[in-house]
Length: 373
Image (tube, rainbow, N blue to C red; front, side):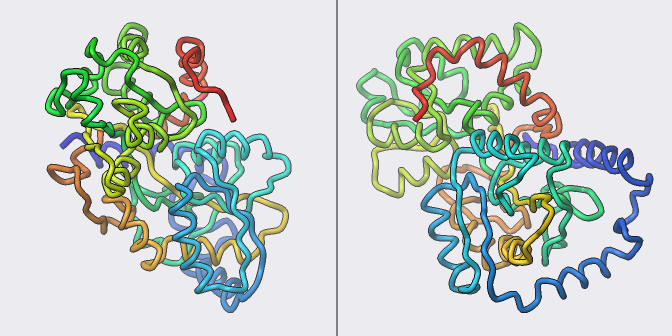
């Protein structure tokens, strides 16, 4: 099994507890800052949000457009008096916008954005602790380990190749020839691979940091592989799903994207297959958080409660096989348990080294980036 859940839990808990110890009183027991119990805190929060029928909130998200539309339709039916203003962009863009607005936050809620990004925001004290209703159903490794969590995961997304079988055959290759990252270096693929830009795309970042963790983070290891891969790259695009869409449309042979994006191309009837690299997939969590603001609208907490409810989780299940509550769904493309596909991934390392990785990547490879819109 490529992913060691125990190691990840230990690393994440050590790092987040250390931050809590430094900023609070040194206790790791489940208490809140006002001295009450976590149960009492949840009861107070329930009273605060109970009966909320109206409000207006701004939600930043990196979920796919069609997912946002589908999910919000269900939320709006349940809470018609709450107006939800959506800002939707790729993970890197959402993260940069949130950081730029740190002194005057616009968003009330972050929804479905990389946990590695939320760790960056949390480190800068931008997240308000909040335990949504049902947070006890979320597995420990998929939420903040602070006594009152600052972020809560909903699902996992992972690196996958979307391969256009028609275009691949024109190069004299078969799908069986492409099963690993190393296969992307084949000379026949020069100029036929499209990948997400890690500066603007969470998928690009999890792929790059995944490769660095698989092949070595230092000079002459993972970076050497990325340099070789660069020779076969046609362009780096500013979206996690776009490489899969381009492969589906025949605009490239292989799109290095993520599982759901490729599976959607299959479902849409395009001549593609989805391959998960044999070495294991880089991954991240889509997660939610409450922004720290002078005034927090109770409707924001209502939204976060709903966003991890059974109703919402059943919506996520249609698109992702690994859910934060451990009750994932199934979709084509996995030969075994989807969790087995995930690499040993240190999200704390990813968050801590995000800026330096992006700086080095930009210095080396940005020349093939697609123009920004």
